[in-house]
Image (tube, rainbow, N blue to C red; front, side, top):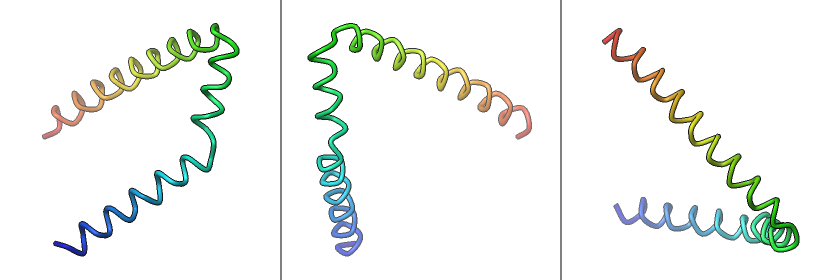
Length: 68
């Protein structure tokens, strides 16, 4: 159990460090600060993506339930 916990913490730490070094969040914040319309467009795209994923999930869960 301790090994699994240590492995999980190590992987989480590596992923968090990689995200920080990648600069994606800093770059996105910079674009958002300089261009307010980008923030609005990104919010709309994220909402559309969430809606699409929810829709696809509903389709697949309905299909899987009809076979089982």
